[in-house]
Amino acid sequence: MKRALTVPALVLAALMLAGCSAGTADGAFSGGSVGMVDHSAELAPMPQGVADSAAGGVAGSPSVVTDRAVITTGNVSVTAADPLGAADSAIKLVTGAGGRVDNRTEQPATDTQRASASLTIRVPAEELDNMLGKIKQLGTVTSVTLSATDVTQQKQDVTARITALQTSVDRLLELMKTSASTADLIAIESALSSRQADLDSLTAQLDYLDDQIDYSTLYVDFAAEGTVTPGSPDNFWSGLLAGWNSLVSFLGGFIVVLGVLLPWLVLLALLGGIAWAIVARVRHGRRAAGAGVAPASAPASAPEEDVQQ
Image (cartoon, rainbow, N blue to C red; front, side, top):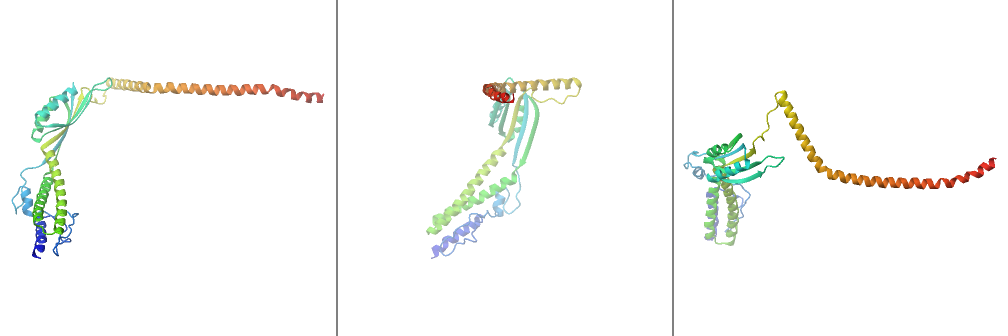
């Protein structure tokens, strides 16, 4: 009897020391068996000592942040004589600095469109300024935008929860080795499964945060020279030139549309000609039929004239 009461008491003590509220108040361990655990409950607040340790502070004292966790992203637009070549050079610079390319899009030059390239690059955070300087040397920079997001508190919170969950998992594994009944094993396994799933989810979140913090993200666009739209015309000649360019662009677009529609226009003209021929033939047939009936009715009026005479 003492054995049956000892195991549930140890399970309850482990859950309380882990700092995770899993409904142990409602599903209390009693009567020599372990009650079902409410897995929908949120994690309880961290014990002060665990939270301070996870945040890099001293247990029992306010945590002191010694290193900020910052996610940096940026957008860079560059014009170059050879956008595709500039993109290749940028990729070599990124890989040489220990970074990587997450996305690459290229548009070769055509008769109606200039060449362009877009890169999504990830570089170590400490190499961001150096990388920006090297990218600026690949052409003429038209715009640069950088933004930084402080995620220090978010990272500390995730780290503290991982510590609490790992402690809970370790204690449940120890209790599983000493459980004496099937009911105890079922309850412990259920609680362990829930905590392990939460632990895996939080670990994935922390890995993603670390990747975003350690590697800054840059979206770099390379365009051909002259692609940037010039300013509004400020005199007669610049206005005339702008109007002429607009007319040429319109005519070019109109010719393209006409070329696309021309086969359909020819087909519609043929169908219209066939329909017109059919209608004309039907009308001609009706007129011919009417002309053949009219002479046959003329002799019918001759007897009336003779009677009047």
